[in-house]
Image (cartoon, rainbow, N blue to C red; front, side, top):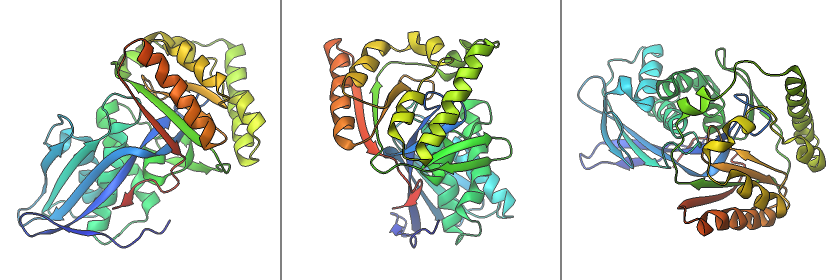
Length: 321
């Protein structure tokens, strides 16, 4: 995918730099645990990079949250270091700023967005030695600093945009899925804490064969529905019979929110990533908006602060801004 020419910005030190925007993402998507993901238009992170007279990569500014400044301990910094090592530019003097404009621990791929933004901004700063897709392996490595494992279901859509299927995260065997015209996402983020490690610890290591068969059938049918723009098939397939039942208890009023979304006619509704965000997919923006208000009302009635995001599927991923 071709990207526009870099936008040049000037720092207070009169050094030119480049800024990119990396979007939030929804992973798992009900029937596709650790396999499916899609990008949102907002929220997201902004990453800025500029050349420096001092050798090596340095993170000089972080806003929007507390993160380590040491590059090797930071998802964006580590992804950038791995890319610079690969390009033989590890000694190059570069300053990086990270502006977090999305919530931490929301189930919306915050660490993945930072890693995706970092590799794109470094690649642009060095005049694009690699194609965008080739940056995925470095972004995945960066995101693993936060997750403790190799998972591409958030990083791939955040970097590449669209709806993605991850056949294998280790080899970055990632594929785009056709997005039907009119498909919209609604995401509600209740401001409660759900730790990814805790959410994974809940999952059983053994699953009944009947459930595996059903889940596989749902995911296969969902992909067919996407490619054929068959909303009825998508509606029948956006069902998680394995992961959601084990994690729902971590999210306050999950089933009430889900019922409210279905009442407004959404195609499907489930947990975004490991939560606590809840997503719904709709076949038009009006349904997505109505569902969002209904979902939001549940948390307002229970006096739980929340944020609402309504978005078409972001087909661009990380872009210059």
